[in-house]
Image 1 (cartoon, helix red, strand yellow):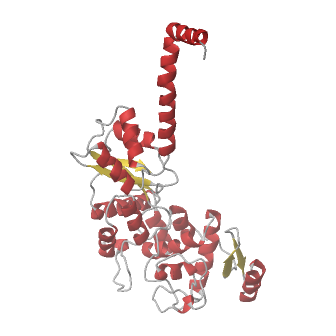
Image 2: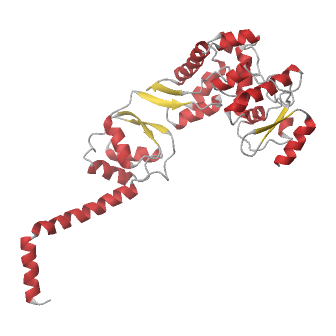
Image 3: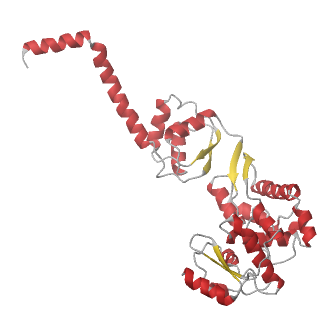
Length: 346
């Protein structure tokens, strides 16, 4: 490069030094932010759903980052530390409980934690969930021990309609954990969490006058919930619940076994895509293929629509139904019609 060009460059830099300085600062900063954004994306790593994180006194940002990584919320602990430092918040992450949704970016997690510790935890019990599934969900979201919750549910029956002397009942609280979204105080024991769920069930029974509806039908609430749990799990679409309830009640009235696959799933303890003939031969009081009448107790938590479907069933001549591929059901009056429907659906 000749001397004249060098002189021109020096002159330009002398008069435009601020531009050169900006380039030297902005370009590295943009690169840094791009790296933070890329390494701070946790969607392909995190476990979905809310998670309870307890930050203890004395924990450093590195400790918090490692904890978040172990809870499968943060993919790259180093990137999280850099994010907190970049935002000037590394020293503002206070001790206490935090509820963090799986899949948030590092930046979003930092923002959640800086806003402050939580006083209540949000937890959802889905419709149809069993005691065991609810317990596992509680533990997965960091709200308590699945083992302790399951132990508490075995004999918990604070309301008269929950009580039973049937020794085959696995959990007296089964079916009476109301499916809803709850705001639970931080630090609540498994026993008290169960009490909240069951109290919510009772409140809805009172508000919706379900006990009066049971009395009018000459049915016990425990039996209604028992039937409703099967209806809940059989029906993918709520509009079919009254018709399915009608089929089950008709079978009971004529002494025919209920024959619900949902009870087989319950005794197996896991969801099976197809129930086989051999499965229906399993010896268990919960097997409604082998035993007439209702199973010993509910097999899950029915929603209000399923409970109401049992109290106001659709009256038809149908005795059979089989699931279509889209989740709807095809109903039949005779066994031969039922077999034909099975063949046609494939």
